[in-house]
Length: 308
Image 1 (cartoon, helix red, strand yellow):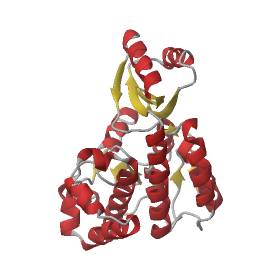
Image 2 (spheres, one colour):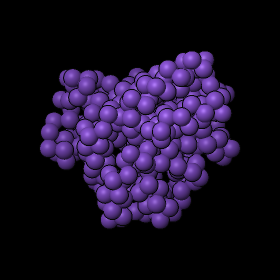
Image 3 (cartoon, one colour):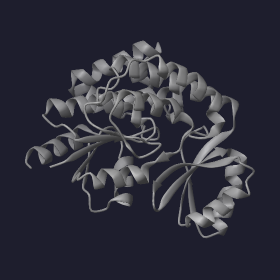
Image 4 (cartoon, one colour):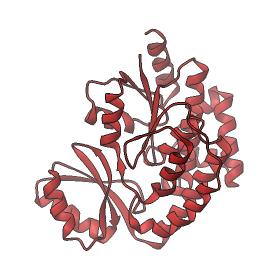
């Protein structure tokens, strides 16, 4: 059996996520404590009590999702389960690189915290957001974008049936109406910034310098890159990928195509929520995807894979 671990990005957060893991597994509690110490605040309290809007802030959501996903990955390894290939959606790519031992946990946590902080500063200064779109062919959608004065970009190519637009909110609101008029559907995402667009260029330059200062190693298994959907197998390529990651679009459709072509016959979503499973169903409906967002799901997934 060939397995791919998929790590979720921002948007997977929910109040109370991972609380059952924290109570059941010391490694999860310790990882969350590390994140709290690094942030200088009680991240566990924000996860437990919120409010929801606070947890959704990039500076808190990103380290929370990263730490919880990584810790669940550690638990899978303790159960004897290892992937043949890994990938992560947006923020999840940092988790994937850390899990593949290309970056130490401490270095990755520091990068994720800085990334979240830089992106939060952009969110405060710009009225940006993101919107998922489905039901339109690419030619029609590109025609809509051409008339919006470069204030909207395709941030995520999530599946043949879904893309995510990102940009300034007024332009996105115009796009939303044009999409509906054209027979498409749109869903606003619970994010407050224009992620994966040139609007984060200044923040990206600062972050790229930080990435360059971090020691990286060749990963122990291939990481499928968000930007190119190509396998990353050496440290230099991971440096390059993460340095440009903030302003580059996520090619998740291509990522899933590469994963399926590699001979993978089982996907495991490692972290909170079921976003990765939903995208797996859109891209590769015949490829099974197990989830680990709760202790119950984790145990069911482990039993299922151990019995094969």
